Image (cartoon, rainbow, N blue to C red):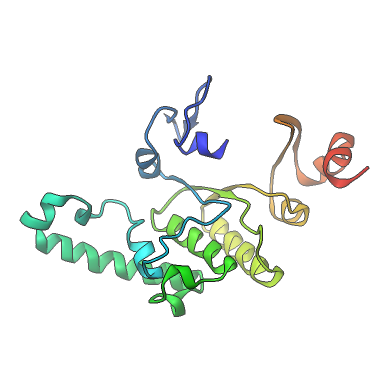
Length: 207
């Protein structure tokens, strides 16, 4: 579902709207420019680039991405590079990866790669972030820090839509829950309501 929303797959039917704009059929980069981005359940870091370089490549409207600018507007490209590097350092400080800025992404732990995924998403200044199992495979201490960071960002105006199988995270962090089982929606509502639904208890919480 997230891959359909993010433009990686085409839906078989229906329409997808985001902030007043129909987005099904748009390429992923256009959807990102509209303010919607996603992370991956299994991190997709650029292994042989540094943590800082991973973030700079995720910036929107970077003039260095256009080949002709390298020849005809080198000054602008250099200014943009400095600007995005500074922004990347701010994001890394926020996600507590600033001490690893110059390390190659392949050297990070699984939990740190999850933080890198979120950091790259924030570089596009999104209004909505799709989080695909953000705490899967992450040790409890780092998972708690990651969710605290997401809560802080949420309080500052960003919206997060997450898929997660950790019931503790779902019930204690989410305002609204949609429960799916075998491809069908079986319940929807506030966490306390969903938790008491017999179908949810049977399917997820253990009858």
